[in-house]
Image 1 (cartoon, rainbow, N blue to C red):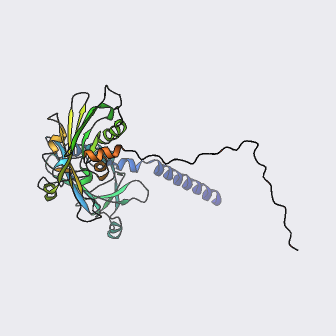
Image 2: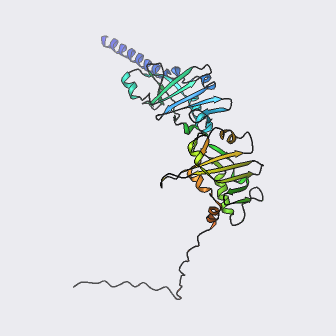
Image 3: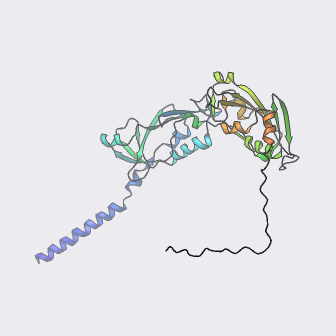
Length: 343
């Protein structure tokens, strides 16, 4: 009887333990603890965002004219490629509760390397420090400034602290086929070329060269920007002016000025100024804030003189190839040498 009671007690305890395990597994602790990392109202009404990462810091500010980059002459921010991906990442990110409060573990998370500060509609600042990915691969570890513990998050958006990377450096953009005509003005002459109709190629021996230049200049994106009173700007010498006329009547005038390098290995700089016939075009507004530096590859594609343009049209003559002599008759048989034996 004693053994029977012991067996029943053991079975009862086993069932209770199994029930406890099942209840523990089914309880969605992580889900109930989950909450937004950043409140939607804070993001919707944000006045500025400051990103610190890679030993650099950038602040983008919202104004009546849109988002601008504070550290880069107040130029327009690249909303499509920088700001929106960050905002969307924050909108999706969640706070899954405490990760650790152990000072030794906190030091290993690298929480001091990257941070994001949001100034809300009430001018209150909210700063989140981001560290290494959590061990379970959920997302970045984080800590709200003022708290003594780190939290688990599923935030995975990239943080970029370089101000230049946040600037929208696109000065002009159109489809090459939309450009009806192109005209050049150099110190040593002028040249103009037109398409007969939309989609038609540029004709003549210069046609292909002009097509290549138009394809290059259809989108003008600067490499950097400097202040209007930059000393190098004053030293630069105008090299060419290019006028692009679109089929819809819009005109973009590109002016290039070159500054020679100070050493044989220094390629120098090429400044590009874009003026658009539409007074509301962004190029006209940004031209009042900064002077833009063209990337080296773009500067190389634009002839600096009429002489350079004509020279580019001269294709090197193909070297004559030796004539092939056909020998009549059947193909010669291949004779192999007999095996040679050494005595």
